[in-house]
Amino acid sequence: MSLDRIIITHTAAEKSERYLTQSQLKKVLRESTGYICRQASPNHDGLYANNKFIMRGEFFGQSLDIIFAVEDDRVVVITQMSQHSDSLRGRFYEFIGSSVTTAIEYTE
Image 1 (tube, rainbow, N blue to C red):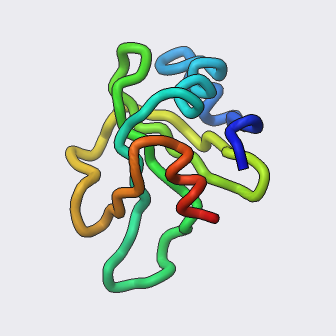
Image 2 (cartoon, one colour):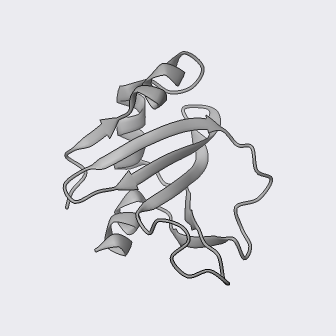
């Protein structure tokens, strides 16, 4: 799968006044790098979806978390928000890579 088909949910689009526009979000997912991880629980296998990820980084001058899901034929941006959690490193987050393509490869 490629990044040709990126869908922006209504929730993510509504936040464009505070954060990134739809075109900026698509550009970030296609071209930028960040810290990409997914929620995980070492004691509860399968508790969190394997296709839902967090991309943390500075994009267009803003420190953001972009929540997205990799589906069969598309990537869906669920929401975007300021970085609320102090750290996405630790036992409840699994590091995936630095680009959205690594998240796509993870789900395949």
